Length: 389
Image (tube, rainbow, N blue to C red; front, side):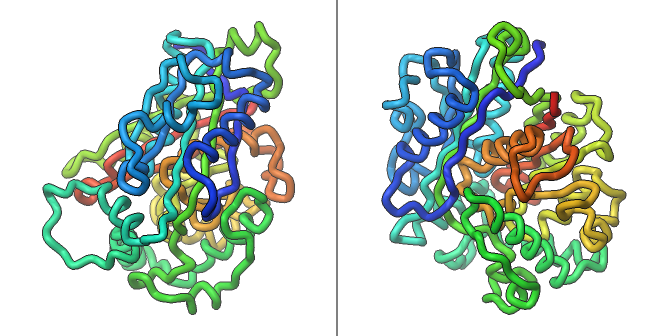
């Protein structure tokens, strides 16, 4: 296996782009990522394109990447379409890394793009609800105007509260922190700071979750350029970030969870001690998920996630700032773009390009991204560990 580096990143603003589709968003992210790498489409050997919901929201199926990238100069390359619920883009990252590390090509591009907004909100939420094993679901009356995954997150939050003493105010603090970061991130969907009181007073979605504790519907795209170590040296590419590990697992109801297996694999493959992680982007589709992720990623001892938050250790200036992008809660969560966007954000932190949100001295970063539901487990889960060169 060859060493692999990230040499370019690109990302649109995440927002409700009423006048833009997957093609327009993809083109912007690809153009920016190639320019950042000082490469052209001709230099790319393989493309991995992530999208989760277009088939159900816009009707574009089967050749989503070829359609979205039609005018980028990338047609003619192998374009592999990946769909893995909210972990679709992490799956594209995994495959692009595998292609370069395994020698299939010298340069690979991972692109994640999603157009989730639609005049009929029920269509969007039906698409999200399809990320479950429908053959195993019991018939249930579900609200077609919101994501069924919020009920899953709410149940996990109630159990976490019972186990650890966490409170709804703690979850509100996560939202406050994420909005503080997003207010300083020009590509975030929500750029207004909020208070604990505002979070707690917002409309209840599923107890203890309120509206401001839940990630929004939005659109966006992100792209990441990977290159072999030899290619980086031969071409003198600037400011590369080393990929220490990428791990991807599928759910296994009744066995060890997909997150636990992906995280263990990433740490084992990279040789990184969890307590050496300096910066993290985690899958906070609902606010409680961030605190749970602290413990999953072993950023603290089991049961100490709430303490890590309350001590300010995951805020800017703390030991391990988490979701300095604003996270899914505030940066936004166009599901097919999220995994790539997390990698973009960590790469920018390691390159020292995050402005007011910059974590001082960040050297090792990690992403944490789940997709879909398989029983009580995630259907897919991916982790990347990146290192400043």
